[in-house]
Image (cartoon, rainbow, N blue to C red):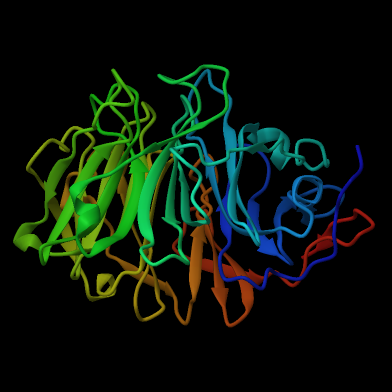
Length: 409
């Protein structure tokens, strides 16, 4: 196999997604020069980074002149007896609009290995098929779930964005279950009452307990001037074409949720963490029925203006990472068995300031915790020393050269 390394500096695009498989180094996904790229951390023959172009060959074959404009990635939660997988989505754009490609169930261990094997994902084109093709389709967001039993994909779009009446819509991608096994993915519209209001400003994939092995969306938005937080399965598990039911989750005082994150459990259910105002709230996987009341875990000025929130469960501990409106990286955590006890949570601490974007990358055994931060055009990896609260970081200057030898840190 050709080793498709490339010479690259840290990605110029702010968005970077980090995934840390149970074995191997960290994986960084990003867009550079119109291509979806991977930089993976390697340790042999020297410690450093290798860069790989994941999309150029396929786009050159299918749509010469198209470029990758957006992407999504997910790493399935470690589960005994299951192979940990990397799922990828790519949005390819050309003069006709946006086009969805998926590469699902890539072996994470192969992709993270020091060799070039396993970093050539097989892409599946997923053309829009939910009715007559629109004059033009603009894909605004793609989300992929991290369940270990199978991937779930959600796509937000703007239909006919150049027309007189562009329409926002959301679709789940049926990749076999309940649809046409063995056939191409199918787009199924996921329409809810919250979509008719001022719009959804935060969403994430997860699964309530008793969800019949189907992921759902947590959606925070406004309807009729009132803040709402919903959980809605992606489809009716008994008939995907039937309407799904939405459940209203309650935040005290009807406060608007600024940021939220689902934390996947080993059984593929999800606990939900949400920040409203300056308070962190919690919904267990079993407390997500209609009218479920949030449990307040604690308040802190560091939570105010939270822009993004991430949650991970590794090594028996849940860690929450957030980026607030002041550009500060905030971290707190608790033993997983005591997450419902506010006293078990550590005092929220500010780890780093003047940050534009973050992506956490905790290792598989939970001994070390790490995240990547975008700061003034630089990409920084920050790691906590094992057994301490001391955080150290270094700037990633560039990825591997075209010779295939990793760049030494």
